[in-house]
Length: 447
Image 1: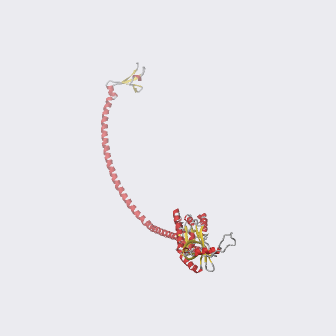
Image 2: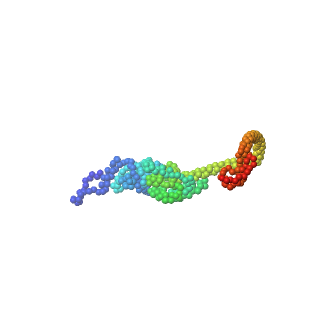
Image 3: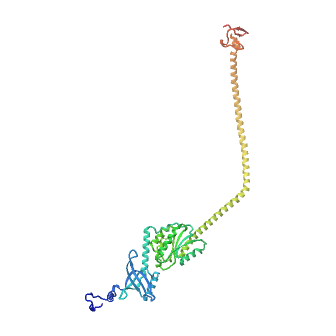
């Protein structure tokens, strides 16, 4: 610190002052001598990362508020070329990503203040594990939020069509992963036909989320044309896949009306979309293989049904052939056998008829004999009764005959051939004939 006495001012009424250079020197003396500002691990986000031709890396370290946009602190920083190459290799090997803008990092810094250039932080070390841990933490928070919302398994529960052939693809048109996907589908070993429609999206960087959401909305408007959605991106740095760890994008995929296949990165990579899609595969090629397998399974099922149908038909044909052979033989043998059986039955019936007829005739003859004897007995009985009755009636008739009546002194009177039994049958002057036991006479009625 400069302790020399100040020079007297040329203007006595004007307050005395020091130069900016002297003031900055005081700041530099305070900052550069402060042990708490040396080799301190600092957590911040990288911004404006630039590598100069001389190999030095210049950047800003910023800290943002809870909204993720407001900058609450910032400082200029530098990684001198002698350390930058080593730290760059260390970071890329540890994270699988290039050191770039927009990353959460933990770096070891030393503060220095230069009278001419001001405050600057010199970065001397970096911890790749913090960057990976920060990405994993954010991913876990989003997954827990989706679980709390109750939507994380919605897309997985959608039914798959028996054969999946109409596919909406979200990818970058020139990406190698998209080319591998299409090539795998078109040249499948089963000859299956697939119909794909590409919906363009940026699959890396800040435009990933808005372009993928835009593609999903376009597919949703014509969802009846497709059977599933495939989101694919080839391999790359793990940090490059951070865009797919977005809550809004994951929420849209989780609630999408069509099953979504997620094929992003390599097998070791993991994103939030892997947890919400209906199917997760490790690469774009694996996405194509999954669709091919679905079709191959259906072909195998059809082949199984075909084999089963052929077996059943062959079994039916064999049974029909056996029955036809049996019937053809039966046509010859059964009529003869049936005729013999019917002849035997006829002979039995004839014998039965003769036997039964003889028995019946004998029974009838016996009954006729019984009836004849009964009739004879009855006739004799009736004749005897009739004879007795006739004898009795003869006696009665004889007793009641007119002759016997006349013999007893009675007479019979007739008028015009009719016997008179009442006085009213004649009137005075009628001529009547009176019969007696001996003879008759005529008489005229006087009263």
